[in-house]
Length: 284
Figure 1 (tube, one colour):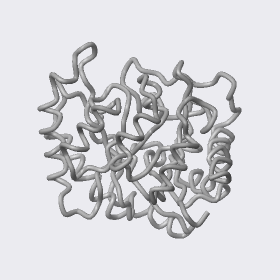
Figure 2: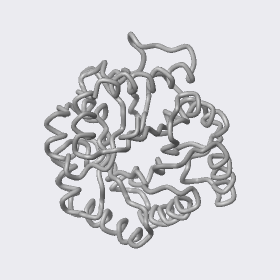
Figure 3: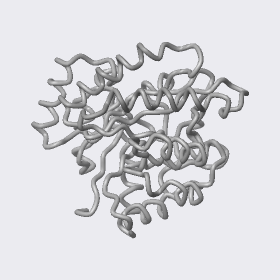
């Protein structure tokens, strides 16, 4: 347990910060990748609220590893990028209060049915503007592969991370599977850029399942990540519908949940996801 640290999107256990703290403590986690706080997205909470959350986490020996922000989850065409940069500045301020080392972010939704290559120049220009906004702030911007954005497959993630060298990478196996990307191939292409890994697995039909039960080669990815000196892992269960999931996805998209792995409560699903990771780590 000393060679890695486990964090989580604990808003999947409870929308309330007190419930999230309880879920982290009973699972022996180190802290949060913070995404929802008392029903509000982390990018929209106030400075005062961030201070309240920090006090509660400190009192329980927990920390915030990363801001699970929606930065970059806007349309490359039709959304107000200047306003989005202002939101990034606010997230940076919140990160400083919460003690977060990282801000999870994305590379913009592509127009459906169009070739992402058409928008590459604009994507890179906007990503460069984001890293310039964050320059010198002491917090890393970390790009996550996500369905529907420019960097949804390994090749375009590599394009992003080699073009905008200030960015770090977040590796999400389930998201790769859901766009038809084999994860061993993705890992070999991106491993030099990966700062941390999201622990989420999926089947080729899109269903999200506990880590190690899908097609994401999660045990192998974790082993390779730790072998190269990786330390930080974030549990992202997605094992049952939870408050806020719909708001996190693009309009018209829906994670395929359930199947064999169905849980009665969000706490039960969260604990199952944590236990699946611990089973893998016991064999690493």
